Image (cartoon, rainbow, N blue to C red; front, top):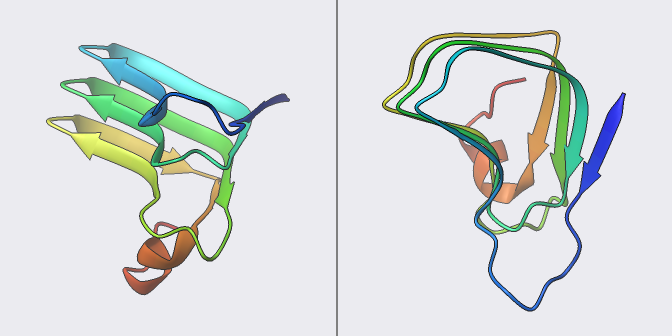
Length: 95
């Protein structure tokens, strides 16, 4: 399993992992925590599979997206755990 954790930086980082214009992508067996805004983002992509991914950030995170999909279709998210701050808990983030 791969472990990715964001640490406080002197520069702003908006997406910890981003795929742009990507097709037939599988992301699996990773753990991502404490991204400053968006943990995993797919933009203008398709044929996406996310499996066995754990995403987490503290409950007091004000605006943290677990998985952000923009202009993306044909997405399958399975066997994953997403817990990503206050905003997502209020909006029923993908379990």
